[in-house]
Length: 385
Image 1 (cartoon, rainbow, N blue to C red):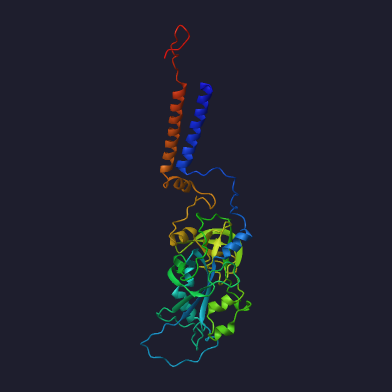
Image 2: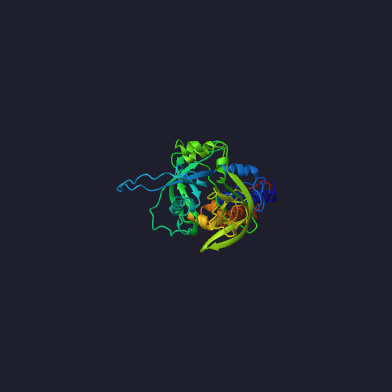
């Protein structure tokens, strides 16, 4: 092999070594076939993805009772009004944000909302002589709250196979963000939903999910008699029924501020019972909680979900970034962190690898391409030893 051919081969080998060094130091994966692009954010969610998301949806039944003072004298039992034998309950929706925790709307577990539900049980109090509403009562003790979580028996992938009582870890009132986090114990880990990395765009298509609470007694399998007799809890009645979560689609119509709190208005249909459920984008990422904190236009289809950045902050995931890369397209920060553990060290390792490859190539070229003196020969044509 000639000296030139050897130099060219060694130079190619040096370049290949440099490329391998760069790949090893930066953690770059070998080239693969192009992966399918994530679905566009302005399209409807894929039916298969929606079915998968519904496995993370949880029904919530909150029962409210008057607190019992152990030192108070027991009053004489008052005659029960029609319907007073049924528990005071509210129906909401939640979703798993981790394998063991559930997110819902704050107003679903707010004791002030429970107090209002108890006080309104017999209807608004009015003056019997004038018919005018009586002044509201003074300070009242917080009601006893019990939060049941359930998933329908027919829901594929359900992990809550029997209704369980969950603990309220923290919550924010409706006018403070309308978010709540619940803790679940003793159940298999659930599949959580991811929070969108960035804020939604105006006009972006969204899907809201939750359990409908309107006309729930018309659902097949709802055992009102079992509920009234006390033989079953409200959550057991709903889990044994054929109730399923529903989904409605619309778009982001506006970003508003209510009492200093950012919210998003959507034109997807929301109804009683869907509060606390997630509103997701086409990739199945949660944009906000179905809040219904306000009804700005009676009779108009403008409903409210919580702000994405505020939700991330409440869950300890940091505020949403306007320019964050969507799921399936890792941001530059993620690429750099994968390369070397920190976003600043990756470029340095690349430079070192390139310099090292160049130095190796230069040394090899110098060794084999430098001129060499011809050996001395004797007069007889034999070389000297």
